[in-house]
Length: 299
Image (tube, rainbow, N blue to C red; front, side):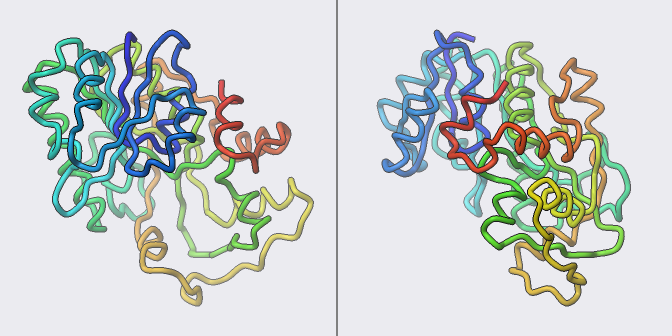
């Protein structure tokens, strides 16, 4: 890598920046100037992007070799493609690889069955329908310009500052029980690691980035409470729970996500299941730390 550019330098993308070699310039965008210091703390040169390409963004893109896109599409489409498609297609002579962060939500509901990258997408929510179309457009762009595009379909993200310990401390943890319901998860360190692995190999294709053990969500809360030495919240039957429409929609999708393709590419997960990850977070004492300090502890 000679230069990295991140559209949408959020939690996962900032963790990736923390793994980049110190001599590799990393640029990243945000829509809020108030987040500039957060990006700088992650080693990222911050730039504004709210759908319109500024001169600074254009200049940084011109020297970029590796592009990360972590910006969700909206009803108007993918904001990066809408605002920068011509630049991506014709003004980035050094570009070697594109990584697009998506979601396992594109698969929809499979009644608890296993899915892999060959499984047809049957998105349920509108946000996942938009993701499927964005994936298609990014893969098509890569084919048109002759550059590999890796689509990383991410499971539920957690890590320092975002985990069951924090929810237990804040009193927001719930043990909702829906028989047969499971979710995959992924520690932010493994998102960063998978991105770095695929970027260094200039590997294109679709990859599920998920742990080895899809599990009932209430089990995660119970395990975290045991490590903390506190009583877990009471179990609540799903049909009696008060949930936002978005939270309820997550429980409308039940599947087990295979990560075999990612492993076959040569990447070894640091955290294969939630127990290993939560135990490390607790033992290291960084489970409740702010993101800037947490990133320093990534592998």
